[in-house]
Length: 429
Image 1 (cartoon, rainbow, N blue to C red):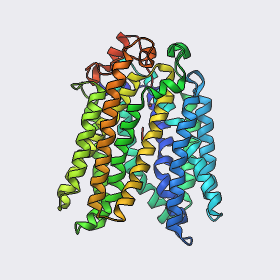
Image 2 (cartoon, one colour; image 1 turned 180 degrees about the vertical axis):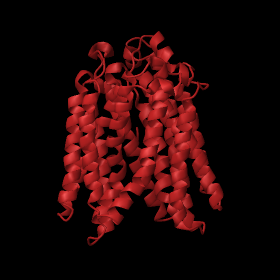
Image 3 (tube, helix red, strand yellow; image 1 turned 90 degrees about the vertical axis):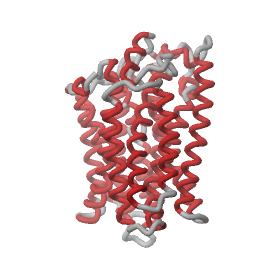
Image 4 (tube, rainbow, N blue to C red; image 1 turned 60 degrees about the vertical axis):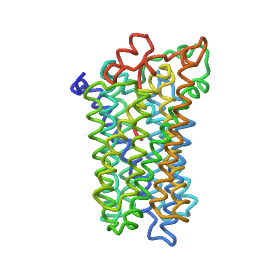
């Protein structure tokens, strides 16, 4: 199936909604730091606000995603985005307010749209042919990496070149545009709440826990790349200014990897692909901490970016295989929450290790954490796959499509249709 199959009006409208909803999320952590940096203790306050925003995102995805109803998702998504827009506007208006007020607005800005990533992913695959799902996920990943690559320049350019409140107003305006654009899309996607065969939503989501662990493991590596790279370059005697171009290369490589992944089918099941690539990325990132030359560090992160996008897309396909249609949006919201938790855990670990050891040691510790999480996920996936084939199991209740089936990426959709499992799903992360 070609990428041309995605060039339909609904898919293009959804791409527009995704960009206008994601760009505020991508710019927010840096934008809140720049918003208060000139106040006393500004950088510390900004870091705290960024942390509160991310915590709000995780809690919003965890609490709101499972409550999203497939057949009437649009009103809930619109309300979440509208509240997010008002919260960002409030941050701009109240830029000089007490830190508690800013913290409450930042938390609300993160939490209110918490169901949006999962809802948009579920809507995306309801708009494409079954055989084009892999390409849809690849295109979505490319779009996501492009947004995240552009967001730092947008935030810093507007905050430093115009006014620190401008990124907040831009975020509010973009989310408002996303609300309006939602009415160019279907109100929801087809799903039968009975497809879980009496199994509760909580138990259905819990059955896919190994995939959430891989999500946390994957983003722990991104946290290492973003947060420790400047210190690592300084340790190696390289100008810290090279961190920006190296991270841009990482994002561009990830976009290329997503594009290549969607061009054809690949050996092994998505679950196996995700685990193998995740181990490889951890080893590559760990190796980059040991080399003393900028060129090798950059090359290692470029390779990590290429493979990281494979991890992301294969994980999305794996989750789609593991859940019944009625749980897709909730499952992707849970994945979004676990990804945020993984990023935060790695950031805390990196900070703790750097306080007593060199940056290279922090990266090695983070890579070790990723490998440990991957091992836990692999063991859990093996047990889940075995129990899913048993009678009355959650995996057999509604999903059962190709997990561990050995189908290639391009064949996942057809395999899912063959066993009448259903479909539907949306970043980034």
